[in-house]
Image 1 (cartoon, rainbow, N blue to C red):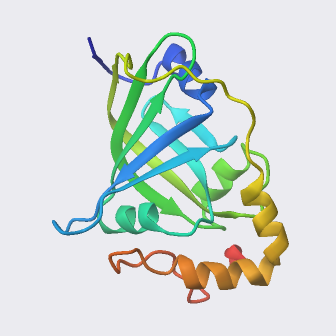
Image 2 (image 1 turned 45 degrees about the horizontal axis):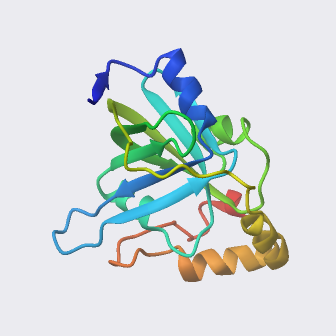
Length: 189
């Protein structure tokens, strides 16, 4: 039986921070737009307080989460236990995107290992916290983190990452604006 929580207390915070992977779901306002679900991982997630979480967002082949948040802010983050007691926790809320040089970006990035693929920070004001059983989730072992994101960014170098973001991160698959690459955000260099 699921439970709705008033806040992210210390017990829930500890459980969330132990999960090596989570999923982020967003959608555009347009009824014919594409819903997006993205897996996330690495040491990049922070519980900032009882109703606020954030993560370091790495450069990817798309920009759906950022584009959807900039359009409407709606987001759901889902954690699931793959070992031990089965459990799923969902954090619903309103997300915002911060770029290099902004206070929220600097605050969250400082909490995690540096990564040359870092492009933004997503902060979520959480307005609903719930869990459910997770009985249908398989038991799996965490073998290791993949270091492909870091190696890809190092191989491309600073200029290569700028070009990659310009090609892959300027617009969502539905044509929504993604990263502003007009030069105003020089911190992405």
